[in-house]
Image 1 (cartoon, one colour):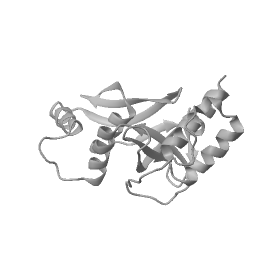
Image 2 (cartoon, helix red, strand yellow; image 1 turned 120 degrees about the vertical axis):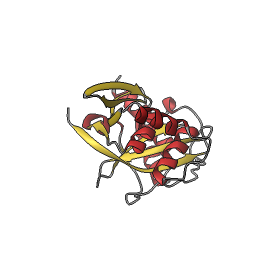
Image 3 (cartoon, rainbow, N blue to C red; image 1 turned 90 degrees about the vertical axis):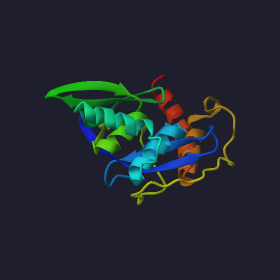
Image 4 (cartoon, helix red, strand yellow; image 1 turned 45 degrees about the vertical axis):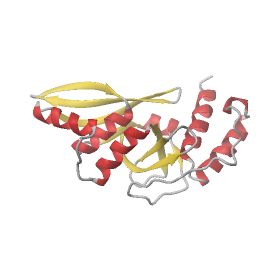
Length: 196
């Protein structure tokens, strides 16, 4: 399986799911994006690293981890999103210490927050990008952005009760409104149906 490098395109805030965020990743010059739902603390840790904000005491946990890793001369070489199952992404950090490689499982949000701090590349497999990727309404954002998203036109009933054609239509609507969290939920339900 071939790896593709991903770049962070943005973070979108959602008020619909208890202050969660959608972290948007994509290949360079690609319209296919990978939205990953992350909690508020991890979104903040990623945003701080991307914006290179001046560190304030107390340090964020990811900054502390970087200091510990640096102290013990461990190098984070790359992060690989290696699995997507039932709407969940699984990630491995490839680290090197004294010439030996070590593989450490981590949540995507934590792995990416550390990857930014170590300037380590982020990868996934082409089949994961094909399976979980979506085409979003924007294509020219290079920096982190936070947007309020609204789901006023979306019915609150469970996605399972929709027909697949209805879901595809709602997915397009969510993408046009840049409601990436809803889009990710709909995409996951469509993906689940393909595996049945």
